[in-house]
Amino acid sequence: MLEQARAELAPTGVLRAGINLSNFLLVTGKSPTGDPEGVSPDMARAVADRLGVPVHFVTFQTPGELADAAGDDVWDIGNIGAEPERAKTIAFSAAYAEIEATYLVPAGSPIQSIEEVDREGVRIAVYGRAAYGLWLADNIRHAELVKTDGMDASFDLFVEQKLDALAGLRPRLIKDVEKLPGSRLLDGKFSAVQQAIGTKPDRKTGAAFLREFVEEAKANGLVASLIDKHGVTGRLTVAPAA
Image (cartoon, rainbow, N blue to C red; front, side):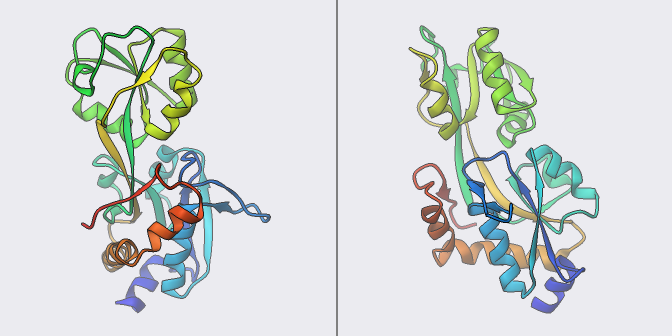
């Protein structure tokens, strides 16, 4: 399996790893040579090491851009949040890590729970192409989603238009709530972004290899050690076994 997986995942002799730079929990910095550093790049490097090939990082400013490139010959594996819409063009492993997604509500809001957000008349600011934004698009039934093209933009829109809720990743919203006196985060989560590793759907042996690698990395403590190494303990959690 390893030889066939290597042939499928690194046909050029180098594993080209697509990395989403916008997730600050998964990419926490840059090396002196300019390569991304963090849990996501280290997971890609570990895959390359197992395959016995070098890794080359192909970076994207947003997860949507990485997903859009699935049909192009620019990356061999893509580290991105697994989500049904993306799974139409990317064969994903199970998640190796999870990040809770919840809501921030403004001072004086009558909304007290996650369930109360999806009601008629409620307007939610959200980064539309984030994994949690795609989840909301599939699952919100009554509230109105006001979509933006980034996390900063969704915060700005929430404030400027005085919307009812801001959807986002809990670690980011913890920072945002400090900027808005009286605002608060709702308990619980409406979803958890499933950080996974994907490849082209026709690379079936390669996809099977990635699935096995991720399960092993969760079980043997690799994912937990990377979370600790990069200082994101408590904000990024190891996903349960598939």
